[in-house]
Image 1 (spheres, rainbow, N blue to C red):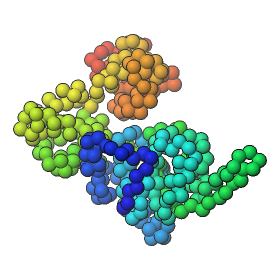
Image 2: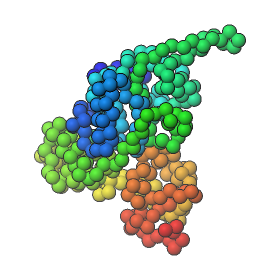
Image 3: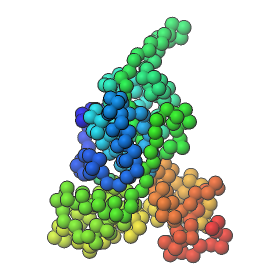
Image 4: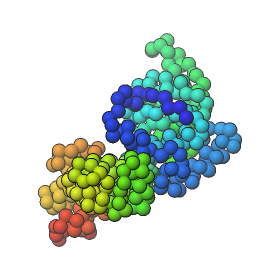
Length: 338
Ligand code: ADE
């Protein structure tokens, strides 16, 4: 597989990102979890290869950090094709996507992350490209403008989004298939932590693996990040090997609790409970109250708080659930919606 750099590929990457790449599974066999998605993909890829055709355009959705990018690399690898990686924010103009599309070869995978952020001009180029493998180029302006149609290679668009609801119905209908990635199980995250520890060459006690996994928000990216931080802690405060004690103390120092909640999660819950009588309260108000961006609260914090059942979304706004109150060690008010 050949990975071409694109607008979305930074020239320098921080150490942690390089390490993330080193921990990334290289084959479907190494990829732990998301069993149904993997099984479906294997069938699609196998059948397309037998027919000597590219696979249909594919939409991957679900919370961030669950492996959508990793899966797209594995799809290209399994197909034996090149992958071109970019994102909805990097593609600003119709010309940006035009030059990428014309540079693809037959069967190549084009991966667009955060596809809900594509602007209208770019979407309009992508529609005919997805449907008919055509690129319409407008030359000139006003009355003298002419449309030139270029044939494109038969590529596969793999698009990823954390917000499928923001995609228009016509755009969504152009994908042959759509898969939702779900949070991993405790056991799957434990396997991922063990695999990553082996790749990093660090020993880790089974109880420490379980502790790290419990605090990982059931998200591989978080699990790997915590493993690396706890490894640093063990190196500085212990012998270097990750014991249960080192894992617990390391996570405590990071202010991550046994459910994986960090300071901002607690701030969100506490603010709704204490300043807004448990809710319902709008996202804008919460964001202003804790000085955090709305998108970050919505994309990063809320999905996990809802998954745990500590927070709920109602038509009138966010509310802390009785379970959320229990986690905060607070008594719910009488007027709670539950
Ligand atoms: N690292 C990150 N995600 C992974 C996964 N799903 N399986 C194995 N290693 C991973």
